[in-house]
Structure formats: structure tokens, C-alpha cells
Image 1: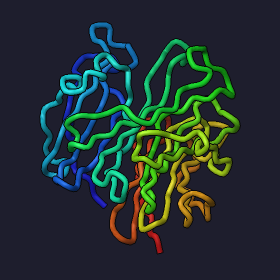
Image 2: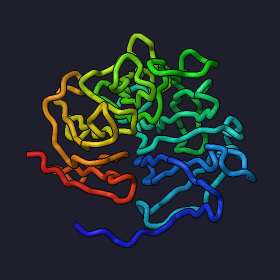
Image 3: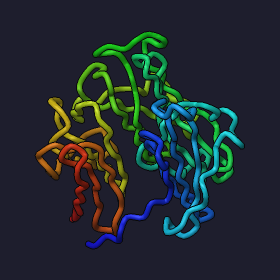
Length: 289
């Protein structure tokens, strides 16, 4: 496979650590690709407050609109230190709320994570306005966090055939185990019933972003498969929507960090991942049969 040269679609100029993680979702009803991202969310830009932007592409990512401040139509986003994703959001295909766009992420609180929490946003008007929906607050809320406390972030989501939203979440402080947090929503991302918030000890994780993909009713998950640190990039697969994990595919044994799974075609999925202390990007193409 070949890759065309990198093209920058937005520039943070001289701002120190200006642009931060973002999210992409495709609205297949109107064939528009939407990207949302945050600027200065870590408060390292001395001349700016946190801002959230949206961009749109009508040609599947070849060209993009200028960034638009989300708070213009969504006042809730004014100065909100929110990180989208990373990765991608979804458009619901099944009831309830067919066609709804859903994006999840987390806020940032550098004061020992006192109020940092995970949120899902949804839009029923093709991404023009967004509503803050399902929330998982860091616990104990308003207090500094330590190892073993509940702190959910960097969520990845898919829609299951029954219309529920399955979310796989970074377990930043190792709540209950060094593994992933799992949550489900049955109302299109509006709420997370606490009776459906669990952990999956089979998905060992060092406290890092992972990726989730549902392809031909097979669930794939990628992350650094280690409790000792960010290494051993692995793709696991499940034939029953995450209830059990049937096997894994070793990708890279050394230092590896964030990743993103994607469909390639009917018989292949791909995983793009950081490696070697963020110095390189690796890509693996996986044949399904």
C-alpha cells in the first residue's frame, strides 16, 4: 500500500502544544465528513482559552472547510476544556434515534484530575448543534485522584445490532484492575446506566488510548497489551460483541502507544499506531479469513 504526502488541514502556528486530540465522524445521510478538535485544552497556550472547533469535508477528506468555533451555535462549549475522542464517532443505523451522530470524549483538569470526566455528545441535525448527553464523572468527584480511583477517558464506541452503544474506555488510574472500562447506552448516547458500567479484565491496558471497530459483526480492539507500560501493540477480536475475546494478533512488540482501527474492504481491516516513543507511525493490514 502507498500513502500520499501529508497535508496539513489546520495549523496552530506558533502556539505551544496548541492543537489537541480530535474526532472524525461520517454523516452518510448527507455524505459529509465531520471533524471536531480542541485548541489549547491543556492550558499551555498562555494567550488563549480552551476552544473547540468543527470542520467539514464534502469530498471524503480531500478538502475541508475553515474551522468554525463550536460555541457560536453551542454555548456550552464556551471555554470548555474538552477533548474529543480521539478516533472516530458513529452515526446510528438502528433504533432508537436512527441517523444520530454520537461523539465521546473527556474534559481535562490539570489540578490532579479533580473534575475530569467522560462525556458523550450527540447531534440530530447533521452536526450543526450538539447536546451533552451520557456522562461518567470521575470519582470521588471534586477531589484529587490516586491509583485505584475511577477516571474514564478517551472512549471508543460502536453501535451493536440491537441499537445499543458499546463504549470501550481508558481506565486512567487503574480502577479495579489494569484493564479497560466498558459502558453501554440504550438511548442513543443520552445516558449510561451504572448497572452497565463494568471492567473487562481480559483487556489488559497500561492506561492508554485504544481503538474499537465493528466489522462484519466481528469486534476488534487494539492497544498496547501490557500492564507494565506502553508496549506490545496487539489487535484482539470477539465474535460475540465483546462478551468473550476469541484471539489476538500480535502487531509490534516494542514501545507502542495510540492506535486507530479502520475498515479497508470486506476482507481486511487496518490498524495505524504510534511506536518507538512517538517517533514513527506503523500500519498493519489484517486479512480476516
